[in-house]
Image 1 (cartoon, helix red, strand yellow):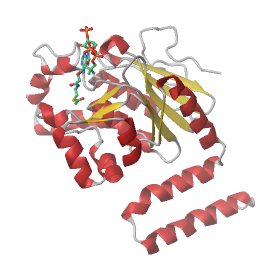
Image 2 (cartoon, helix red, strand yellow; image 1 turned 60 degrees about the vertical axis):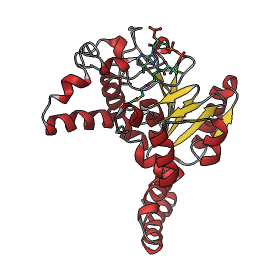
Image 3 (spheres, protein in one colour; image 1 turned 180 degrees about the vertical axis):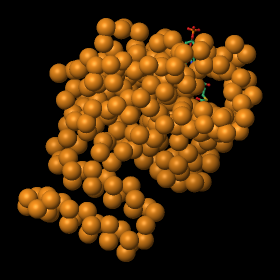
Amino acid sequence: MAEAATGGNPEHVPDTGDGSNVTISAATPAEVGLRFEVDGEIATITLDRPDKRNAQTFATWSALARIGETLPEQVRVVVVRGEGPSFSAGIDLRMFTPEGVPGQGSFASVAALGDIEFEQRIAEAQEGFLWLRRPEIVSIAAVQGHAIGAGFQLALACDLRVVADDVKFCMKEPALGLVPDLTGTKPLADIVGVPRAIEICLTARTVGAAEAVRLGLAEIAVPPSELDRAVRDLADALLATDRAAAAATKRLLQAAPGRTLEEQAAAERAEQVERIRALFGRG
Ligand code: ACO
């Protein structure tokens, strides 16, 4: 059964899963725009500002990071989804205004920070995305409608992407004078290759469902009405494998591109020794 997500607070302050609500700096809950639910081994993070197309703020990223820090141990699959017609229209455009986002400043105010403090702010935002790659979990982005900028990068931060036929991925940052800095450049280049990643980012064009599947950006595309079901089926299939073997296999696969064949063979041996000992009670 679903555990308390937003507790008694319908204003979308995420719950840590242990009953205590996450504290989000000075931001108001409305700017966080997240719901968090745990149902057995599946956790669901829902971007929940559909009226603003799930635009993201620094508070959203802090809340994501806190969810990662406090994820209940039983969770094996994390689903990231968006309420409403769009997965996420990216960073909240109020950041580009002089007033900024209440409690979080604006790009003009962060631009005045020193280099170290400025990069630290970005590193904190990236923490909201990086934990989704942990070997102990498999993260799935369920993406419908627009996934622009930070929205595209949040989908890329997940291990797998299941998309609706109406999906529109767009890396808009370069068109706005920015670089994608929410950890999206590496998975994009790893998945589609550097030349295609350059073309997609530097034209800031839209990638639709059929192309996303063809490029490997999405595992499957389904009609919007079937998105939740498709994600649930994938989650169930992932949960059918042994927990420790799944984590060990994910560790191997994640490290494979950076290793030689010999190094990878050695890593396979080391993981298998542990697995077989565990299976035969000698762990
Ligand atoms: N930040 C803040 N508010 C937003 C954002 C955003 N990124 N995107 C949409 N909204 C708001 C709109 O201002 C509008 O608010 P209002 O009803 O108070 O006027 C509401 O969400 C609905 O937006 P519409 O534009 O009316 O919705 P529509 O479905 O026609 O279009 C679309 C959706 C294409 C996503 C459009 O809203 C858009 O282009 N948004 C901006 C995308 C963008 O440039 N994001 C930044 C990317 S770069 C990065 O993330 C670092």
